[in-house]
Amino acid sequence: MLNIVIFGAPGTGKGTQSELIVKKYGLHHISTGDILRNEIARKSSLGVLADKHISQGQLVPDELIIDMLAGVLNETADGAKGYIFDGFPRTIPQAKALDKVLSERDTAIVAVLSLKVEEQDLIRRLLKRGQESGRTDDKLEVIENRMKVYREQTDPLRDYYKRKGTLLNIPGDGTVEEVFDEIVKEIDRLSF
Ligand code: AP5
Ligand code: MG
Image (cartoon, rainbow, N blue to C red; front, top):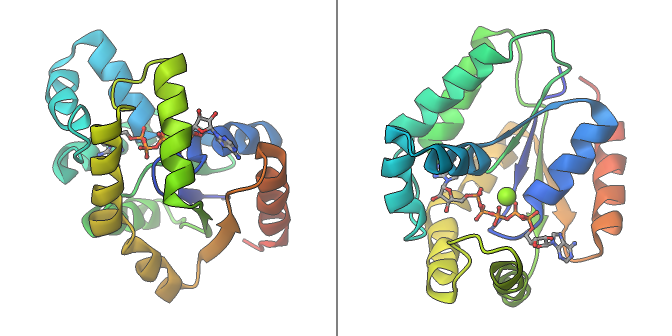
């Protein structure tokens, strides 16, 4: 299976590139952020809880995310070619849980596409989106906290995947098409 993690700070283009990858390679897209925003819109108990964390730019607790992921994998266990995990994992316990749940299904992560963009450019992208479409966490003080949480809790995962030999660095500061071209080159080089 072609199981990929798309990894990077807020605004690096994980969601944008995931949609293109899904179209080209026919993978299931699992975005924990999108799932949580759906739960918030439905006002489910998970949504009410998640909203408290998301609106502050803090991570939602690992146990909730890991349970949610197991549920989504069970619902989609239908012979898919693979998954693209977007915005997950974000902590070491989440990464370990993902490895475990995939190995129980005799599969694994074959590549981690790590997107890098200068923080000032990311803040500009997210402020622009905040004005246009209004994601409630696209406000300067919340964005700054999301960046801090990323640096402290999520960026260390690059080392985790580097040790496993699956980390691929992708420059994320070109146009959407340029970044996608780089991603396609890396995916087409994979053997799995
Ligand atoms: P999540 O939804 O994952 O948000 P994020 O990581 O903060 O990142 P974004 O979705 O804002 O950015 P992106 O990298 O997807 O970029 P995009 O393509 O949208 O998480 C939100 C919150 O949910 C978290 O803060 C946390 O509270 C919670 N959460 C989620 N997952 C969790 C987990 N696993 N554990 C715990 N908590 C979790 O692009 C951004 C903008 O830039 C867009 O406007 C886009 O059009 C533009 N853009 C994209 N590419 C380019 C380009 N090449 N050039 C110019 N502009 C571009
Ligand atoms: Mg996203």
